[in-house]
View 1 (cartoon, rainbow, N blue to C red):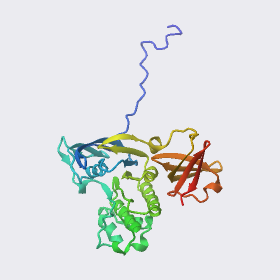
View 2 (view 1 turned 135 degrees about the vertical axis):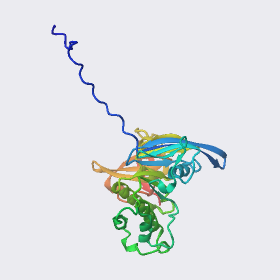
View 3 (view 1 turned 45 degrees about the vertical axis):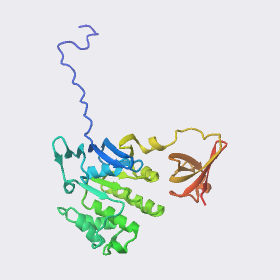
View 4 (view 1 turned 90 degrees about the horizontal axis):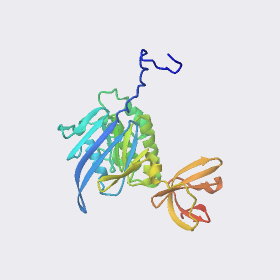
Length: 319
């Protein structure tokens, strides 16, 4: 054997590297359904996958099929054709005539109108919803986590809109669902209360390691509460990706042509002694760098004037 005979025939072949298969998605969804819209019949035809712990926002115009998608996922609406699998369990398979009823699907559903039982107190709402196979500690935990302890013996009629929505969120979590479905849950609240409730949503998503699907028309809410966005238009997915990839303007210098427009602050971050203000303007996000003094009176959710002049953007509160 010469020095170049590195792999003689009498030696075994080296073992092949083991390549792990891609992990199976936590949620697999595909469904079709005819929608009856103001412009006539329209086919909903959607498929997507979501990993465990994901936060998916479903965004798009009214009538696109966003709520219908959540209702098919929950079993409240029947799909014409479809397949739904969650954590290895098949919930829907029209080819095999499998269609689990809603009560057998591990979901928590929060609606826009709260849908609380008027005759039950806050604590009773949670006790009614919780998984009866558990020891019930989750009720006390949720009352504490959602800051509802002082309200636990009150009925919905005595609660504000924000308090009622906190109860609705806690009730949805009480059964420890695999999926949390949110259908415009904060749309009836003012901007300040909406922002506070977003904090609660983020907190419970992390605390209970939820997989969450959110339907919303409110872009700042989508940006804050999701790590993936699916844009639904006329029953089909037109775009999907990370919020920054879909909505942020490409990195470039401001236009030399002066402009002025109204925007809404969606995020404020501190970086290298300055503040980076993210503003939503006409469906696009832009970042503006300000000093501490310039940013002192700005807050997330505030409406502002954005003015660009001579390659420099300026933000002023909208009075």
